[in-house]
Length: 251
Image (cartoon, rainbow, N blue to C red):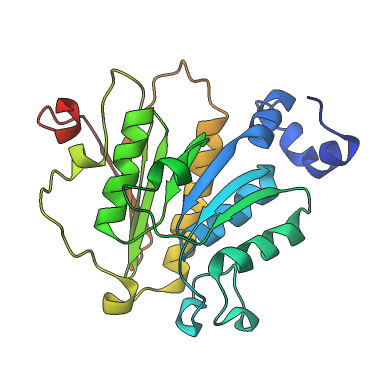
């Protein structure tokens, strides 16, 4: 597959970068990325990924657009209030590039449907704020060795973790948070969220995804959680390691 003349012009500023090749642009073009939730984090992620050349998306969300979403969910406008998020997101993205291939699923992920909804993914982006959903997605990604980016934001702060899910090199969300019972995560509708904090996490997540997809998979991948303190605009990192007592190691 060769880049068209239009694509060469569109991504000209990528291609003149010293270490960014046409091969890397082609990798982005054929990558299939699945989004769980289309809220304040995943909105800027999918917009930027569309602009840098990823063409294949699966979008999963079962909610309608509300006016309170608009301070951070930049893929929607006031004209979308009351409409299904997946359809509004698809319409917005098609204006960026009419050639995008977008599959939409107006559904909530549960154990019974996750195989159907999450299959055929080169990478899954989980922007949900529901612990049950996060674990279902995490467990699927571990089982089928699918890279997972998990991101969240509450108040002014946010965090990002990217799990490579390489066979025989176990490290997953359950390793980091070995919580056995259902927990109530901080949610935007209970603790609030500053709009630009979601944007910062979203844009940094998109950058991490692009770097990961175009990286040499033989390179040692460093797993960490990036924390963003929105009050002082500081970032910090914690390197992760697998938990020998992780539930998924015993399955």
